[in-house]
Length: 267
Image (cartoon, rainbow, N blue to C red; front, side):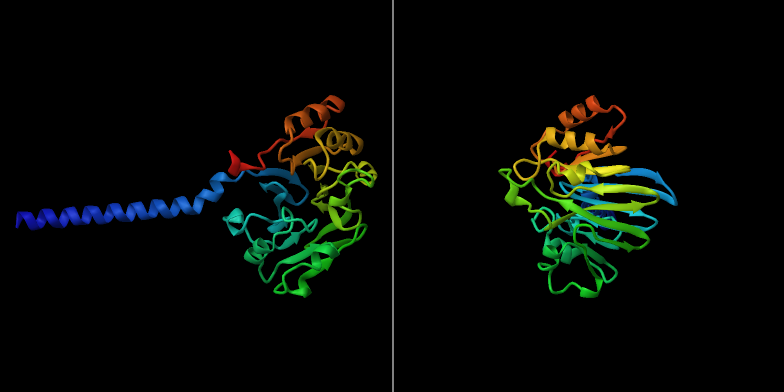
C-alpha cells in the first residue's frame, strides 16, 4: 500500500514536470523570434502613434491606427511572428533582399494590398490577387488606408561602376504621409539629385551597402543635403553606421541619427 502510494505520487510528479517542460519549450518557440527582434520605436504623430519596427537589413514594419505596412518583407513568416498581419506590402525592387516570394506567400492575407513597381509586379507569384495590386512608377502616388504613398526614383548613378545594379526607373523609393509626418524609405539608391532635392522629410530610412548602393560618406552627404529631422541608417551590412552618424552630426547636429540593430540574428 505504501509502495503504491509512493508510485502514484512519483508518477504524478514526473507527469507535471513533463507538462512544465513542454510549456517552457512552447513558450521558447513562441518568443524566440520576438527575443531576437530589435525593440520598436514609438513616434508621436497626429491621430496617435507610429510604431517603427526594424526587422532585418531592408525590412521594416510601420504601424499606425491599427494599419500595418510591411516594407520589403523578407526572412520568412517567423520574422514577423507576433506582429499583426500586413494591410499593405510595399516592395522597392526585384532583388532578393527586398523581394522574397516565399516570405510574401507565407504572410499575405485576403486583406493585403501590394504597392510595387512594374518590374516587381511582373515577378509576383500568380497566387497574388491582382485586384489587390497597385503599380506605381517613379512620380506616381496612391492613397491606401488613408495614407498617401508616393513613389520616388531610386537608382545608382549612370557611369558609376555599380550603375547596372539599379537602373533608373526600375525600382521605387517611397514617401509615406502618416499622421502629418513624411516618412522616406530610400530603397537601393545612390546619392541622387532626386534624393538631395527632397523637402520636409521627418523620418528617413537611408541605405549604404557597397558595392550595391552607396558608401557611408555618400549616404551622409545625401542626408545633409535634404536634412530629415531623423534618419535611420539601414541596409548597411558591412558598413560603419557609427561613422555615418559622426559625419552627419558633424555637418548638422540637429539631425537625429537613430542607430538600431538591423541584424539581430548576427549578434
